[in-house]
Amino acid sequence: MTIQGTGWKHDLLLALCATLLVLGINAISGFPTIADLGADNDSMLRLVEVRDLLAGQGWFDLHQYRMGLTGGFVMHWSRLVDTPIALIIFTFQALGASTAAAEKAAQIIWPLSLYGLTIFVILRASRRFAGTDVAMPALVLCTAALFFIGIFHPGTLDHHNVQLLLTAASLWLMTEAPFRRSAALLSGLCAGLTLAVGMETAPYVATLGACAAVLFIFDERERQTARGFGIGFAAIALVVLVATIPPSAWGVAECDAFSAFQFVIAALSGFGLAAIAGLPGQSTAKRRFLSMSALAVAIAAVALLFFPQCLASPYAGMDERIRTYWLNDVVEAQPFLSVAVNEPKLMAARYVTPFIAILLIGLQLRSRRLRREEALTAVLLIVAFAVSLWQVRGSTFSVAFAVLPLSTWIAGVRLQATAAQSWRVSTRIAAAWLVSLNATWAGVAVAAQSVVQKAPAKINSDADHALTCGKASDFSDLAGMPATAVLASSNLGSPILMFTGHRALAGPYHRNVGGNLAMLDAFMGTPDAARAIIEREHVGLVAICRGNSEELSLAAQAPKGLAAKLLKRDVPDWLELDDATASKPVEIYKVR
Image (cartoon, rainbow, N blue to C red):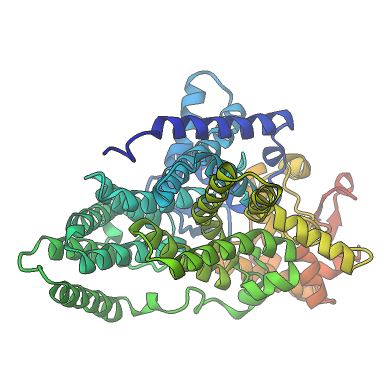
């Protein structure tokens, strides 16, 4: 049997139709997510990084020279994402398009291509999970879920959409392994690539690798699955090391980006898994368990002995001020309880459907043993849901994985309705559809909020009551001024780089420690202290986005600081407001 026998062309066509529908909706509305990128700092800086690459910055040189202190800092992102975006822009420029038109084409083509591919992958995985035709419910739920989580909108050049596609593909190919010889190898390749793109997917990659090992322990027929996944995972790690890391840095361990640490662990675990699966004498589950246990001990020992610094919390070494005034306000890094209290709309849209999906799997487990495909999906869904309880960004994966059990449930209810039509069954179908859509639960949260409060507060602070200053027109005045260093809140760092030629002192990135601390000291310090920092860092302009949540927070924390005074229009005598920017979204002050 090939990829589930039949239907892959049909699923590809369905995914294409869904993608064209979303493209049409965005085109009719004028591509609003490109016209105003809002708070999507990562997509803005990604485009800046691609521009630098096309302008001749070295392949291995990931410095962001126009952000932070003089000389910039090294970003932790991967060229694997820069490359296809740069190729799209280069192709359109070669065809005669202007740079602006080529960049807009990339902002449309890249995320929507990933959107269509992710829909296709989830459709295929849903068919395998259900063991029957669930194309229609899977298509509707997947299209809606991926649309509302927002990582595939035109203009979204961040790497999270790539990670979701690769992780979902690795899961799907793992379920295909008994039916397609190369599926396990491809699953390992996808797992290795998603890890190379960003460390956020480490829990899912580890889970997939553990699943390959456990499958082989319990069933010797899974030998090919373990071997193929291991070889694919280790091989792609070697390719990524050679292709994206300069030889001079092969021995350097970076905990937040692909480096020697990730390569050593991937090579040891991948080749070790493949070697054990290829060894003779592994005929009993006990022997396979002992072999896998020895491999796990070896991996843990290597990590503890050679890379102990990478086993701590990812934010363990972060400066306490940056943690307090930046990380604690990053929406995607919030834990479940914080989201539930402060942003019930986001909580309802991100947590309810995965929870229902887990309940459905649990109910299924009460009546029978889970099939291989169901067990794999259940494990990855539960891990993603657990990660989302720690940080809401994990819900991007749990919402997508939830489509598999939810679409199977809806298909089952529809099948019952075909056998015995009645108003009760019709009601069950409608209810199943409604509770399976995350948009439904977001609407319920908004309705509940309006009932509780006479004048409902805004729910999603990142999108509703924060003035983000994310349009090119907001920075047109700043762009026309001679290039210099700009003191602004970290939320303005990426748009300053994207829309102007200036250097931004601060930016919302954990590696920009010096620049962010200088910004905090300047905006929260007295005007005299701020002036000393501005002179030290050769800052020529100060930019304020009135209503920006970060600036309001800094002003509230330091009512006598520079940020608070500028928001009150109490301007120190060493700053001069550019009259042309008065009362505009971005107000600019020149250093006298």
